[in-house]
Image (tube, rainbow, N blue to C red; front, side, top):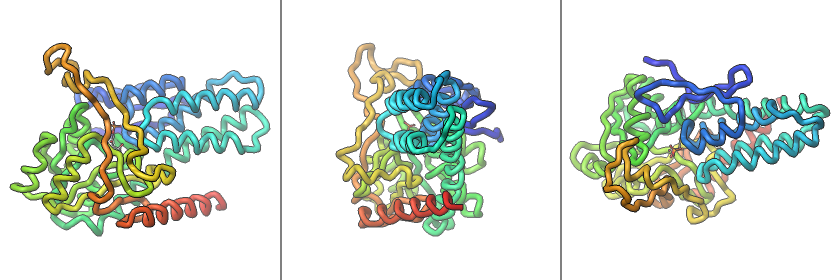
Length: 358
Ligand code: MRU
């Protein structure tokens, strides 16, 4: 088994595994410039909503440490500019905006007197975001134990494991926790076209963990549910609107419809930082459109005729009516989601305030 991690702050650098090269090559890249981290997020060296949030926080720490600002006001101005660059990296995962806003709230309000003190404030907040994710993933896994049957055949979409978070993962973390608790777990892994996060990344993580699995084509979920049997579907989330509509990797909506047709419980899983109470419903979520060649090629290989037009929405929105529940570190939200999600967000805020007072 390979010991691996998505990202770490090491000696003033952000080290990230290059997820574009997995599973063939395990390569870590070091970053010292916040602009390069923004490009790495856009190019999907690092991906997955919580990992993107952590990378964004650390990118601001790099911006602070690389600054030559002569005064604290100048450093604050530079950080405001860096925040805009980092936020422009990808539009859908709210964790990116949440992390940048959280660090910048510290920058704006900290009673720091020197540039060095302000740098420390930025690093502390960024590192706290990353460290908190580890505990959040652990709690998500434990919170889900009661709803995972002792013998559980899952379908999982995209990649939501340790590569997509700082901890053990969200939806995949649930599967890992159930497996480690002694449940008999099997995972059908959606390949997740066009970038194959399922076939490349989730299958690789499950192999490292020794969890039985099989990759299926995205279009096979109906067949698998009807003829092989599936007990539960778990997917991640990039943004959860206040009414419970969930933006996640393209194909999630189709999978939710198939699950509904077969009466299979369908859960979206993520930390409360993915809940965006400022967005009333899924129509307000910006969906990233990526390069059409991601669809017309597989990796570097052209598969459609040269010049074939393609559309490539990277995410879709699953209406809340198709969800059984939303699993977070604070508990499981059930319908009516507008009420239950607001309660979980309030609980998370209360817990954070209490931790700050300690
Ligand atoms: O485009 P990606 O690979 O960043 O998309 C990832 C997903 O859609 C995940 O399901 C989501 O970010 C949750 S990861 C814990």
